[in-house]
Structures are given as structure tokens and as C-alpha cells.
Length: 452
Image: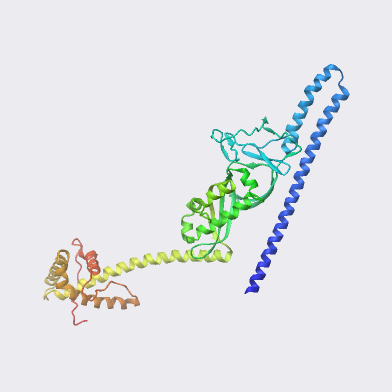
């Protein structure tokens, strides 16, 4: 067994190594492509600007041309910077999109962020707050027509981050892995697909939980520079572990019946493993600057096909069991009422005087029945004293017949050693034949102690 586990672990490690090697190669290729695009953009912009300057110096003479040069050369430089260099984050400017921010590095040191959503500002600790927040700071982020200036280029540059994440496509119901070299980072809510594998419900059934987790950066400095890897690489396993810890409290059936609200339950109740914060969501925001806005559970299924089939079979079995219990309860209730009715009829027959005429006999049965009902309703002690023993005898006889009927065992509360119990009195009181409005049915011959 140990050898088998070791062999399985080796295979898993080899698989992870191959995946990481493939991942690194993809990122290296993407980085080379981005660097190549940036370099080509810089050379192309430099060529355009150089051509304009050379043209003016070669073909424009005199004092008027000097004025033209003074005006056109800065304009040409601005246009090259704005349209060619800034979109590729090179030169003295960069153009973050609305809702995004870019980190500026001086050498290998963090220098600050440029770009913010409308109405937002940074605090001194780089928390994103409303523009009118008392701790909002002016960061001297100068921009012209959406182009933010970087004065210390080429010693300052825009920070790039290798990022791997998954996006869920509802039309195809599939998740696609995205590997990118990000140069700007969203400060607006954005959905990320996170899948929790090998989780267990309270019955230890292995599950796969698919979720769309909407997150946004509330402190980009913490998110980007708190750890050496991408922030999603850190937050994702924390959310997976929190989900695993929470759902083990419930059964698959409970989660499926509450699937629409399960995401909100996870959002509010995933515990912080160290107990320093009220919830896992609070811990992630405080430590990593990432706020989880919402969680939507897309699907809950078995972690493999065999387990999926087992889960379905168990779910069907549970539903069938519930239906059987409901049916059995109805049958049992009907049998109890039927049994009580038979016991009561037997007592009535035993107490009634024998008449030769059938109509007179029926009248006698009704008289005894009404007499017993009157005492049962008005004086329980008198009922016990006068009829208790006879009811116990008749009950024992009828119960034996019901047990033997069709080979079925019907459980009915029996009298204890002290006489007829309150439970049995309750059955008599609630049976349909105790209702005065019921029609009296025709009864057969009396049951006597001799028959027992």
C-alpha cells in the first residue's frame, strides 16, 4: 500500500512538473512577444519623429521655418508619444483604460500607480477609496487626454505581471484557462472561475464545486507586491480551502436544494482558519487587498464519473425512500384507525345485550357505543375503571390479527402494565368513529372472550 501511494505521488509530481514547465514556456513566449511589440513600437515612433525633424532641418530655412520647427517638433513628439509609444507602455507616458491602474517601477522598486476609475482615489497606503474620502491623497498623477506621464523614463517603467486565471463561459458551460502578461489591473469587479475539487459533504461523499467568484482589487499594492506570485494564485487556493471547510457541514442533498443561496452562505460564513478575522473574506481583503464581491455556485457534482453516477443513484434512492416513508406513514395511520375501529366495535359487541331482532340489535349497539363515547369524553378515570380491561383484551386480539394479515407488521401503541395508556385513549378520541357526525356502519357478530 505504501509503495502504491508513493508511486501515485510520483506520478502526480511529474504531472505537476510538466504542467509548470508548459506554463513557464507559455509565459516566456508571451513576454518575448510583448517585448518585441514594445520594441517595434518604439523604433517605429522614433523613425516617424526622426523623419519629421530631419525633413524640417533639411528643407525649411529662415526665421519663419524656425518658428514652424519650434511648434511642429513638440507636436510631432506628443503625437508619436500619444498614438504609438503610450499604447505599448514605452516612452514618457502610458494610457491605462478606464477602471484600470498601472504600476510604475523605478528600477526594481515600486514607485506608485497611475490610473483610477472615475470618482476614486488612493490613500497613502494605496487603498482605493471614493474621491471625497477624508484619507484620499493627491498622488501627483499628471495626465493629458488620458495619457499619464512618466517623467523618469527610461529609468522608470510600467510593471508587468504573469497571470493565469480561468473564465467561465455560460453559453458553452465551460471554463477556459487564460495566461496573460498583464500591464494593467482592473479596480472594478470581475468574475473569476474557481473550481473546488475533492471536497466532501458531511457524508464524506467527494464533490466538485464550480463557482464564479466576483472580485476586485481594493489595494493593488498588497495584491501585486505582497507575494511573489500573482494574487489570483494566492487567493484561489484560499477560497478553495474555505469552500471545502464549509460544505463538509452539509449533505449533497441539502446543498442541491439550497444551490441558489449557497454562494451567499459561502461568502458570509467561510471561516478564517487562524481566527484573526470575522470570516475568510475579511482576511483576504485585509491581507491581500482583494475584495470578494459575490460567489455564484454554478454546479455541484461528483469528482469523477463513477462518483457522479453514485451520487445520482443515492439521490434517487433518497427520494424513493422519502416517498416510501410518506406512503408507509399514510398506510400506518390508516391501519391504526382501522385497528382502533375494530377494537371499539369488539368492545361494543361484547357489552351489548343480545336481541333477536336485527334492528333492535343495531339499536342496542348504538346505545352502548354512545354510552362509551360519553364516558370517554367526560371522565377518563371512570372510562379506565369501567372499560379499560375489556379494551386491553380486545386490543390484544385485534392486534394479533393485524400482525398476521398479509404478513405485514403494523406498529400500534400497546397498553402498559398499569392499564390503558393515554396514547391509546388518544387514538380512540381521534378515530373517525368517535365523531358523532359519522354514519354508523352496520356491524357483524360480537367478539367474546371465548373467541380469544
